[in-house]
Amino acid sequence: MEDDGLEGYIEDNGELLNERTPRIGMEFESEEVTFQFYNEYGGIRGFGIRQDYHTQSKKDGLMTNRKFVCHKEGEKEKDKRRSTVLQSREETRTTCTANLYMSFRRDSMKWEVKKFDDVHNHLLHLPETAYLMSTQRNLCESQTLNI
Image (cartoon, rainbow, N blue to C red; front, side, top):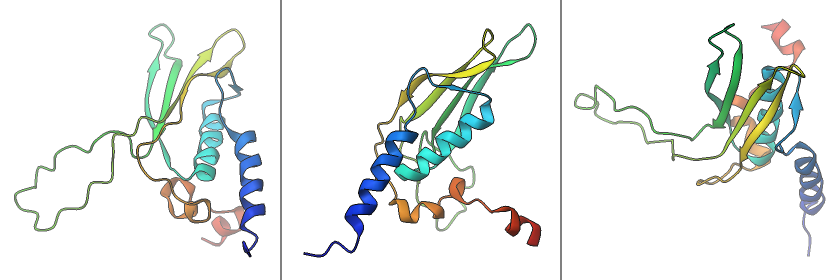
């Protein structure tokens, strides 16, 4: 029986996923690097991410904690125009609990993963269609120069 090369693709994707899976205790140089790392992981797994919240130190205003969540986390606010809208949009959020929580360590001046939850309550995109999600749409340098 033919698999159209899908078996090798799944194995390669599994190896990549093992390399790119966040783990508690991982350290990153900056918040942006952590976001890019988690975004790549989300693209491999088939979900988008967004920033949820952060906390700042009252002493010096330095950001000390940051939480990234699945793009389907939470619920949208009630639409104030609900009575005038003829066809409202379908709800896209599912209160998904998948997240990555990190803390800034002042001693090493790095961001450390403190909590990681990878349980989703919705279907994930296939890796070959992940580019359709808004967080996965990236332009290369030549494309940005053309724009």
